[in-house]
Length: 237
Ligand SMILES: *Cc1c(COP(=O)(O)O)cnc(C)c1O
Image (cartoon, rainbow, N blue to C red):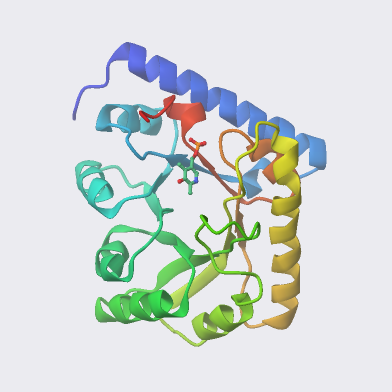
């Protein structure tokens, strides 16, 4: 077992407590149960010591953006934690992702879904996936457009090695988290429309909200929040 320095453990543990309290308060405010909200600790650029400190502080689900970086961490962490892929996924990385990750949150096109299906089938795995939606229409953002979402959902519903879990989004960055609210609301409304249109799919998760705006996302129905900075501190630029 690798060492975790006392001051690191204390710092990470204090921050996780603070995030958990904020989750609780956001849930109380809107009458939801905190059990409905999964905290994904985002560990891009975060070293193993801080990841281990987070595990010792009760974190059980982690998010990574890059396959190469994640591969080393996932093999080094022996505790039974869950790993979510939350970065932009290139098709040629699909074969690694299905071996490494419990959930892929960023499926945003049919060719990628087809490749994941093929690779999951190849290792006899049912791969849980979320579909990333670009609700803001920003050109710089990944995610499928709301217009093209039905076609992708239809494709996924026919692929037996993919287990559809729900929708994910990454709104534009705002200083004021209230400004992100319309985007979170839009994802929830899309979920409601799609659930009606695709009764064979289970829309379990809404992955939305990060360090700066997860309280607002919870009020709008988030079941997964992805929090990095508020737990691990600022990332190097
Ligand atoms: C980095 C990242 C996060 C975490 O962002 P913070 O602001 O550090 O909480 C969440 N989701 C995605 C997709 C990310 O890339």
